[in-house]
Length: 114
Length: 115
Image (cartoon, one colour):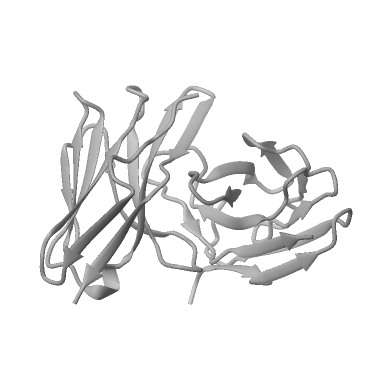
C-alpha cells in the first residue's frame, strides 16, 4: 500500500538554528496534511496542518511547506530550542467519497544540542 | 482542561488473557480512534468510531474489539487472538470524522507488555 515516508530518520541541530524536517508522501490525491510532535513516552501532539489548496502555512515558530508537484512536505522550526527535541512525523489524508485514508510517516528524531 | 485520558499508562498481562485499555475524552468530539505504534513503523489504525454505537475496522483489527456506548468513551480490548499484542497503544479523537481541518488529538498512550 501507499505510505508516507521521511528522508532522514535523525536530525541534530544546535540550539538557535533553524530545523527543517522533510516528508515525502506517495498518494497524489491526498488533500490534507498534518505534522505531529511526539516526546518520549507521550502521545503525538498536533503542530500544524495544511490543505492541498495551499503551499505554505505559518504558525508560531513553525512553517509547513507543501510541494504537490513532487509530493513533498516540510516542517521548518525557527530558532530551535532544547524543548523541540522529539520525534516529528507527518500524516497525509486522502478523503474521496466513502474512501478515507490517513497515513502516518515513521518519524524523524530531532535532537537539539545546547 | 479538556483532553484525552488513557489508562493505565503501563499494563502487563500474561499470554492468553484478554485485556481492556481505557480511553476517555471530554472534548465533545464525535470521532474516536485506536492506533498501534511499533518501533520503526508509522501509526497503524486498529478501529475507529465516527458516532456513538458505530465503529469500523481499521487496517489491523484482527485480535482486537471495541465498543462505543458513550460519546466520551472508546475502550479497546486486546484479545488472546492478537498474535503480537505487545505495543504502545494510542487513542485519538477528532471533532468530526473523515473531514478536512479536523486533526486528530491523541492521548498519552498505554504501553502493553504481554509475556
